[in-house]
Image 1 (cartoon, rainbow, N blue to C red):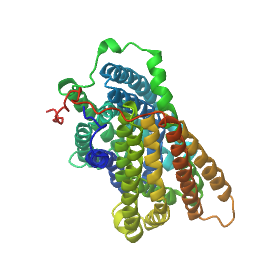
Image 2: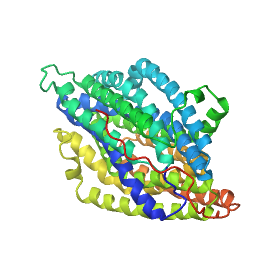
Image 3: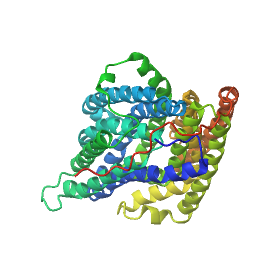
Image 4: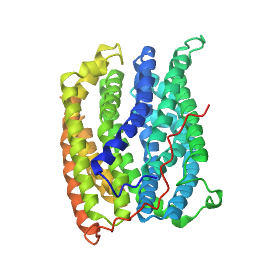
Amino acid sequence: MKDLTRGSIVGHILSMAPPIVVGMITIMICQLVDLYFVSSLGEAAIAGVAAAGNAGFLVNALMQVLGVGTVALIAHAVGRKDRGDANLVFNQSVVLSVLFGLLTLVAGFVLSRPYMRAVAADEATVEAGTVYLLWFTPALALQFATQVMASALRATGIVRPSMLVQALAVGINIALAPILISGWGTGHPLGVAGAGLASSIAVFIGVLMLLAYFLKLERYVAFHPAQWRPQLRQWKRILNVGLPAGGEFVMVFIIMAVGYYVLSVFGPAAQAGFGIGTRLLGLIQMPALAVALAAGPIAGQNFGAGNGARVRETFVKAALVATAVMTLFLILAQLAPGLLLAGFSNDRETMAVASLFLRVVSFNMVAQGLIFTTSSMFQGLGNTKPVLVTSAMRVLTYSLPSIWLSTWPGFRMEHVWYLSIATTTLQAALSVWLLYREFGKRLAPLRPPEVPAQMEAEPEAPPARAPA
């Protein structure tokens, strides 16, 4: 366990963010690898995999419910030096991860085709996306276990083991993707099914590696079967914090789905370009998101310890670092969009859409960095309802006007992306205002605690080794 209530806040952010960003980038690379290797199968395959991958936002919403609730409550317990409560929250989150995983399996197998029919431009795209989803669903279900274990570690200030496991799992996925998709070395190409299967195998191995770490090396939180009996009070604690954050991801899913819907009139090449552009934009936003995710446990532990001034300082410094990072990537996206997009498709129309999308929507990046940071701070405070409010506002101001604009005779796809810039900026301003209002309500009664002479927590466990 790492005590985040003392020491340099910027130092904590800079030490935690790199492993977090490596882990997130490796996950994003998995999706880009799938798109890269299926690009040889045609526009329908690219559009189908991209649209099917968007369904992952709904599963990410459920994962955020568990992840955010786990991080916030365990971080508060660590700040209070209450190890018993930290372990109880962790084990109840493990039970919920099993339930949510089973729900995802059932929903994926039943709803894959209806979902693709709702968003795809033609029958070939529907078929490609459906096949990919059916083979990718086990990966989505298994990620709940990964999310809970990684969130528990992050709440205690430990991020390196999760990063190592994710990097190894992605390496496995990258190695398997060309073999299963294109039949390299086997002579039996599986196409889009191979992309989903490669991801499912890689995630399964990643779960086994994290499980091995917890059983052999983790010392602060651990599996206790005696605490696996469902406790509705603990579930309520986790869900009260996590559900609004999960709702935020549902809003992101709606925004993405609206994007695919309004672009369907331009054909599969437009949808494919949009899919590539959104995933690449997500990739270059990862460093700022990692800074925000590092700030959450710092704020949570200090809030649990009663140190309000340090919570405020965490937001200011995290926001400054995230803004600096986003500004650098904004410049890169404006000056070299073709370089960033190189190799994802040989179709000129698809790449033209992706390049235009990246140049326009990258102006969102600074505002999006502030949204990431405020969202993580609300999670650290244990009140994520304002995040849901700002996300719902963005859905209303973006989705309905986008659909309306698509009915205009002279409608162009960039009209929707200009609207995105305006609504993202509005969400960022509202998020910062709500956070400062929350500071006034939640932090005013707090007083800086006396610094203990000696830490009572156990030392940080060494990084995990990949099991043989």
